[in-house]
Image 1: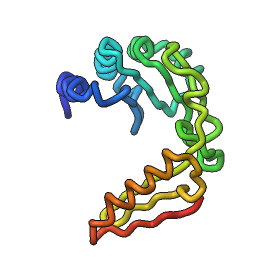
Image 2: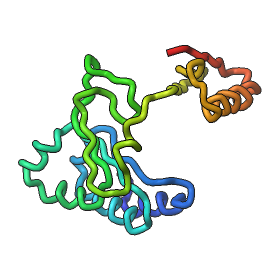
Image 3: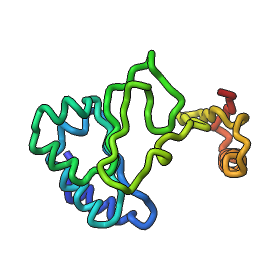
Image 4: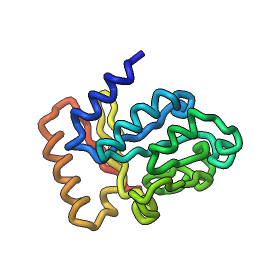
Length: 165
């Protein structure tokens, strides 16, 4: 178990290099009380807070869970709903079409989250898989591709796979 204060300290030590934090994995709302402390400190330091949950927002409101309600005071954006593979979509922040994006603050707009995935990177022990680069026409994506090629060229034990979507 990691101490909440230690997590806050780690986040704040990198605050000049990050835009914010994202709570995900497992079910973050099961730890709402502890995450509230982290989210509040992030907001006080002008860091954004994004939270994923498998619950639907309407159901959460009906539960009237004080810890969850308190956490949402410090969350900028909530992405709700379980990932459903049959409803998978090619969006950067939502994995499936049943998920909704709820904006609690004005920090972000719909245009910030309605972004198509241009590439996907998977790294395992011996391989780097980059998917979608051939379809990238923008200068930024071409630059990223060249950075990956240069960065991993010297790694003799890494195989690089560039795959079209």
